[in-house]
Amino acid sequence: MSPSIHVGPGEQPELAHAVETAGGTVVSLAQADGVVWAGTKPDSLPELPRSVRWVQLPSAGVEPWMSRIAATPNVTFTSAAGAYAPQVAEHALALLLAGLRGIAASARERAWRIPPHRTLSGATVAIVGAGGIGRALIEQLAPFNVEVIAVTRRGHDVPGAARTLAADAIGDVWAQADHFVIAAPATGATRHLVGAHELAAMREHSWIVNIARGSLIDTDALVDALRERRIGGAALDVTDPEPLPDGHPLWTLPNALITPHIANPEAALTRQLARRVRENVERLASGEALIAQVDAERGY
Figure (cartoon, helix red, strand yellow):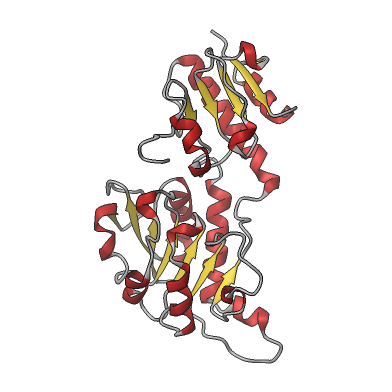
């Protein structure tokens, strides 16, 4: 049976086309048994009729949506987790290279000075949260001859990783890698996953890259570590607070590199979301499990 899908807010021609390509029918909300929603704020999603059994959200991170999800237990919500993985991983790799090769520091200079710099080749890189983004990054790191340590919730083997640690053994990773990429979900349990203790365990040349959520790193502890040059540096696409206020020390510290939450370029966002919509509408029609179902208890 063809799924009846409402697409909103307003006209979303690329997403509507994805629904129809997957065999679904685009209908009004009152007639829908599924909703594809491109609005980024939870209060933009209207009250759902009883017929709706599935909602596709536009973002990989769903923490702003959790109260709405918890209040609608009879509806399956799916996130866009993994849909944007290649381009976000690409940004993570760019940040890592710009930091450890001294490119970010050199770009700030107005005289011929040699900044601290190292090569990525032969290094050990820990990816904390080796889901879709982390796995895409492992593929992109392959030409650099690095050893990857993957940290996942349960510690199952990750293709391309030399070793995998479960989340409850994460304390072991901070002294074992040269550099770190944070790609874990933001939950109450992962707030300040990286704090003063973890930063103290890192090597003095270590760079930490965060393309997940700012709350995963204790900003004050990070600023102290950077000021005292206890680690090589930090490259952050997300911060806490966000937006990062004018005059914050992270803007001027020579071993900090900030980008304004742009790892997922808008030009590619709708195209990748449309691909996920096609996949999930096809699965809805065939009765298969939907991709990236949100677990209200886990928080992602």
